[in-house]
Image (cartoon, rainbow, N blue to C red; front, side, top):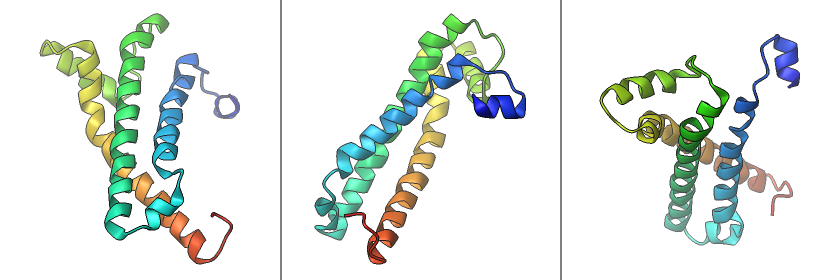
Length: 137
């Protein structure tokens, strides 16, 4: 709200619903990392847990965003494209692909790449904090 006021852009309730996607990403990360001792068991186990976080949070993120676009976007009567995903979704709908899948398919590559970068960066920051003995344990 403050950012909209500061930049002079219109406030959209629909945009706030994307916080659900962020909450699901946090939940997926917490689900697999709540017991930090398992990460330190071995390097292959650490890689396995990081991959599980990446896969689970990616699926939660692109599925929830696609569900929002499929079922909630029509309620807000928005005919103007919201993002670049809307442009791809429109093309896919012209190929008789369902609405949900037309929103889902373009999100997959970008969401997975985003989750890879964020998860590995977050783990790297965590390891640095542990190395320099900040209270993360």
